[in-house]
Amino acid sequence: MSPALIRLRSFLLGDGQADRVVPPTGFTVRLTLFTSAAMGFLAVFALALSLATGRLADRWSEALARTATVRISAPEGQMQAQTDAVIEVLRTTPGVVGARVLSVQEQRDLLAPWFGPDLPIDSLPLPQLVELRETGKGYDAEGLRLRLSAEAPGAVLDDHARWRRPLVRAADRLRLLGLVSIVLIGMTTAAMITLSANAALAANAKVIQVLRLVGARDVYIARAFVRRFTGRALQGAAAGTALAMLAVALLPGADTAGGFLTGLGFQGAGWLLPLLIPPLAGIVAFWATRAAAFRTLGEVT
Figure (cartoon, one colour):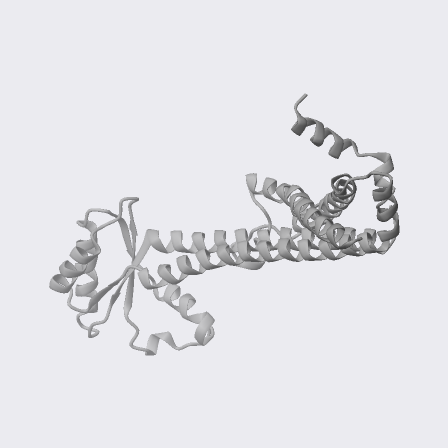
């Protein structure tokens, strides 16, 4: 068996004599467990919030990308003629699979959230809206604008690009924000575990001195602290992650009417991502405790 495997086996199985150096109960145990559980809980929600917001922005952007609107502003006597001309142009445009004129009631429904249901739409000079649907390959927007300006001077094409760009930027920034939040949570976990390890090492300074007198090396002593604190971090993070996943599962499911507030859960394989949090917490605890142990042992005389 290679030396690396021997060290790994010793780390996983532990050493009863060395483990006595680390207090099995007390303030440091509760602090490590609570910190790991809290950080695991927050990491799950940061991940869920990032993924859900990204999905919502992607869904909005995709929906806007498949549709566009032609707005027709013309005198009352020319409105019908220009509307017919727009429909004919759209019918013969490659990449456009359908077009329809929005009814008065549909336009009223679009304006109701802003002006209320009692808006006297019949007495207002509102433009006529024509909705078009495009194929997966899309259409030539500039070419369509030129044709519309020639056939229907009062028609303006809105391909929703000004709506899509902010949504895509928001999705990217929110995903980055979720990643930054998880990194900050990991750094906070490392800081708290370092404080706990330092406190435990300081409290057992006399025991460490005795161990050194009988020939114990610093690597032997540090391994006991690293193993104990890594195990505590794994246990706490696993408990916090499990509790957070249960809380996320109990949230309302995705609903078009509810929008963002009803789509905070994970979907499909996304439920596997929180399972990475406890191992990552263990890795953070391993290196944080190892660094703290060797630094403190170097100061203990």
